[in-house]
Image (spheres, rainbow, N blue to C red):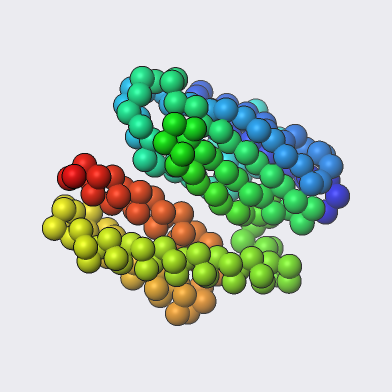
Length: 202
């Protein structure tokens, strides 16, 4: 892939598609943007990444929603979240969000193509192995938090953690590729929320 076949961007207020990397950009390509919160004391920020060429976000194809949790309580528009999008020559996107105040960060890798198209590409085999390792690490971390801090977690939150741990373990056991790609982000969010509960109890 020599050029980007679609524009890559994010949804902003008013259903607007804000293009970060425009269509036909030569690959590899990189974009940097600062984003912030829209309400006071916002502890997380959600990013909706899309591909397409319409100025209306809902007319483009979603590549996923990504949540950075654990932000420090501040007035709206004060937090500075550094957003970096890197697209390599294979069409793999590395998305990174980092909060400069709390040093919390989220890194996610995905493709401009669909999952089915991605799974037919041999070059993703090493990346999938990396994702398995990452997922196993998150499972171990979250399981440890459940064991040590179970008394601090509400019943519904503990059930949510247990359910997603089961799904993640099943994904590894069955080598379910799509779940292996999606589950690390879910577990990262749960880990951040559980760590926040732990800190609040100190």
